[in-house]
Image (cartoon, rainbow, N blue to C red):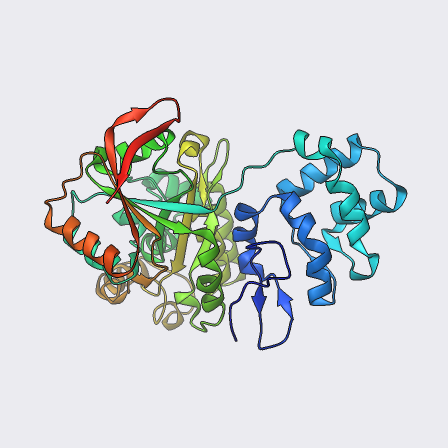
Length: 406
């Protein structure tokens, strides 16, 4: 099986080509890349050739934002009857029928200048990770030059409250339905949240833009650190390789963060507790669903970060443990769980093979004499990676830093 871009389709539209035939499939795990990389209009343009290449219908290629835009211009614009029906099928079922001969219908939509002008969408080609050398600088650089990323437990984050529950005893009692006998289960699952998944954060902010100044301040050690820029299209092979990895605990998920007004993880945690209480404590799916929502949900105050997250479930908190216990969870079980975590969390592999960056951006206060930076530059030159050094002056007309390529 190979990963290719089908040249018969719009430039860079990501598709998986299986074997040597012309069968193309936009896979489930690639939808995040699709939605970031391509606007609703890119997808519409691709549909005629995509259905022809696949020789089948296409389902769920449009995001919820795409559907909202399609709904809006279907209501506002006058199309032929067949094109309107074509749009309404997409809006209703997120489905494109191969036999609907979509070429003429798509063409009619895209030829309307008012459609694109009224419904612009921001799309992205790159994403970025900011790195500070203030702590464990050598370890961070060594991870990068081995083409890996480091994925810590959330409890190792600088932000104590990010992806972490810190429940007071009163809250544990309330979550246990005000019944002391239920509290050990709450403690049990609360302990599991600390070491059951690993997370690495990225951003859609451009490190050359002055709009990313806050990212340099928060995560780039006020310009003394650096940023790694990656191509979104390169994620195709990364995601596809994950799909063929049978070890679910090592599967690497990739999703943008949802910024939710009045976000409260306790509500999701309560649902997880109820699943365990009433459907059996081996219900790992309930726990993993909670972790996923926990990993990619934040309040709107963090929206400026435009954050993406890679996360994977680790085995430290439950593999080889929960299967050993039947019946009710007790205080003794909770103590043993914590002891198990302390010994098993050391076995978790935090370094994950990752795509090589396409550029390394050094902050304005980053010293070229620093041994770690020298090592990073050598790695970049060996692998034809662009190295850019920011200046401390701002180009206000272009809304970006002054910079030079080394």
